[in-house]
Image 1 (cartoon, one colour):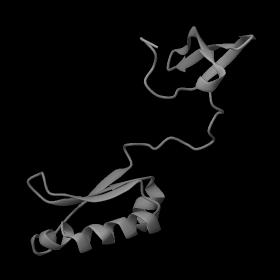
Image 2 (cartoon, rainbow, N blue to C red; image 1 turned 180 degrees about the vertical axis):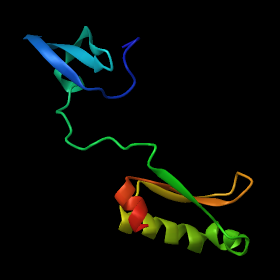
Image 3 (tube, helix red, strand yellow; image 1 turned 90 degrees about the vertical axis):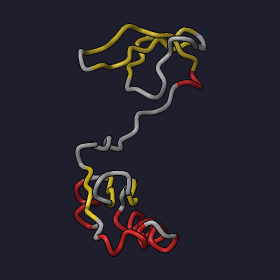
Image 4 (cartoon, rainbow, N blue to C red; image 1 turned 135 degrees about the vertical axis):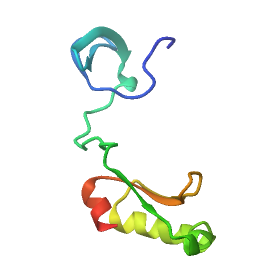
Length: 113
């Protein structure tokens, strides 16, 4: 619906009337105003912890390896590293002044990588 949040948020169902659920979305200031949702627009709470985006890291790519890092072989190696370390993302970034490998994941996954 127009004005609806784009994505998922934690909320509390305060009451149910027929097919409609009255849900207060949690904000950093407490519970927000109630909104009415149909059941198919709700989902159970996920136990997974959100990723802390401050736990990203980048490593400089030596000049002699930039060509390899952006090649098909290099990208496949980064995908393998991503899967084995449990990273959300692992990719070469050559847009800045120094080419880097960007690592995105929790601190343990970055340490393993």
